[in-house]
Image (cartoon, rainbow over all chains, first blue to last red; front, side, top):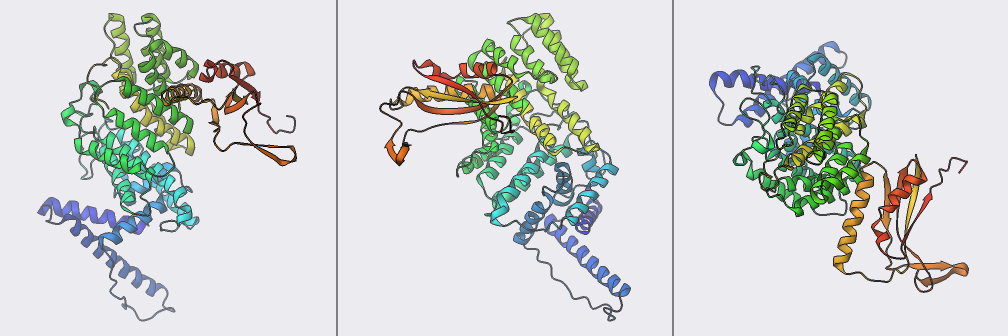
Length: 456
Length: 117
C-alpha cells in the first residue's frame, strides 16, 4: 500500500515539475498512468533484484525479471479503486484514519494537504496513517469488494466515510487558506472544496458499479450534489463565507441541482428508507427558492422521520426551527424548551431567535448565553452582531448560525489529536452537516417572501 | 431513566376514515412522535393493522378480530424513555388519538429484566 502511495505521489510530483516546465500534455490522464506504470515497473524490477541478492539461495540467476504487463484499462482501474475503497473504509480503523487513507491513496493528496484539511500537523497525520496501515495489515484486510452477503454492512462504512469527507470539506470551506498541491499558498478553501469533489467522485464510482449501485448510495450522491451546487456561491473571492441571503443565485450550479434530482429519483427504489434519503430530501427543499407552507411542512416531516431513525441535537434544533415556520414561534418555543440542550450554543441561539419579537429582552439574554458558550471568534462575532441589532431594534436576520459549523469542527479537530470515539465523531460530523441545514433554515426566518433559494 | 409503553386504544377499529382525515392524523402523529424524538426519548413504535387480524383463544379457537364484542382494540404502541411515570403521561397526552371520544392511551412501565422487575 505504501508503495502504491509513493508511486502515486512521485508521479504527481513529476507531473508538477514537468508540466510546469513544458505545459500540460495533451492527454494528462494517459500521461499520469504511463508515468505511474513505468515507476511501478522499475520499482518491481528493483525489488526483484534486491530480493534475489539478499537471498541468493533461492535464486542465483539475477536480472530475470519478466516484463510485467499491467492492466490499465479504465475498467480495471475503476475496479481496483473500488476494491481499495472497501479495504480502506474498513471498520477496524477509525473514521478519521479512513478519511486520511482515502485522501492519500484514493485521491492522491499529500501529507501536507491532509494535515491542512484536518487542521493538524504532518507528524500526527503520518503517525495516524502509519498506525492505520499497520492495523489493516495485522487484521489481514484484503483489497477486494466484499461478498454479496457482507456488502451492505461494509457499504455503510464506506458511505459514512464518503459523507464525512464531504462534510469535512463543505462546512469548513471558508477556513483560513492552506497550501495547494503545487506548494504555493492557495485560495482559501480551495483544498477543502477538493474534498467535496473527491467525495462525490468516490460516490459516483459506487453508483457506476452494479454491485454497489444501491438506493442509499444514490441518495448520498443526490444529497452531495444538492449541497455542492452552492459551493461556488457561498465563498467570496477573499475566502469569506457569503451569507445565504447575500449569495448570487446565478452562481448556483444548476447542473448539479439537476443531477441531485436525477440521483434522488434513482434512490427511490427498494424498501429501506435510509437517513441519506431523508437528508437528500431536506437538501432538495433547500434548493427550492420559494418559501411556502408546503416547503416547511415537508422539511418538518422529514426531520420528524430523521429523528426517529437517528437522534442528534442538531436535527432536534432544526426540527424545532421548521416547526416555528409551520406552527409559529410560540408553539416552537414550548417544544424548544423541552430539548434541554444547555451547553449547546445553538440551542440558545435558537431560543434567542424564537423569542425575537415576542420578548426581545429575553431573546437578547439567550443570545448572550449563546455568545458565552460559543467557541470560535467567528461565532462570537456573529452572535455579537445579532445582539447589537436587537439592541437597536432592527429586524434580526438570522446571522447567528452561519458559522456555527466552526464550533463543531473545532471540537472534531481536538479529537484528531487524541484517540477518537468513533460514534462521537460521527455524531459530531453528522451534526456539522445538519448545522449547515440549520443555519440555512434559520436564515430563511426573516426572509419569508424571497431569497429562500439563497441558502448555504 | 425507564422505558414506558404507550398503548393506543380505540373502541372500534372497523370505522374507516377518509383519506383526508387519515392524512391529517398521520401528520399529527408524526409531529407528536417527532417532538418526543427531538428530546431523544423516542425508542420505537408502530401502528397495528386491522387487515388480516385474528384472535386465537383457549382451545385454539381462531376468530377474525379483534372486532364485535371487544370493547377496545389496540391501534398501535410507542415506547418512550422517561424519568417518571408523570413524564410518560405527559407524552401520552400529546397523542392525537385522544381527540376521539372513547379512545385512550394506556401507559405501562416496561420490565427491565434485571431480576427485580
